[in-house]
Length: 82
Image (tube, rainbow, N blue to C red):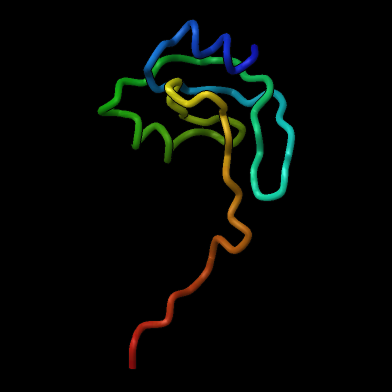
């Protein structure tokens, strides 16, 4: 299902998605095909986001596109002052 269809079915809410297909551009993945699993209440969105299975994503349908920003160095360490 295209992202626009998901937005129409679940207007202005968080949705748990199974990502079926995406395109990659520089430092982001643009989801082009997703299967909605269920809506997620706003108060549970943070927990659902961090406990989502690989290949799944919690995203809000207020966003016009479903974009995953990739971090090149997710283990970047910040050095504290001496």
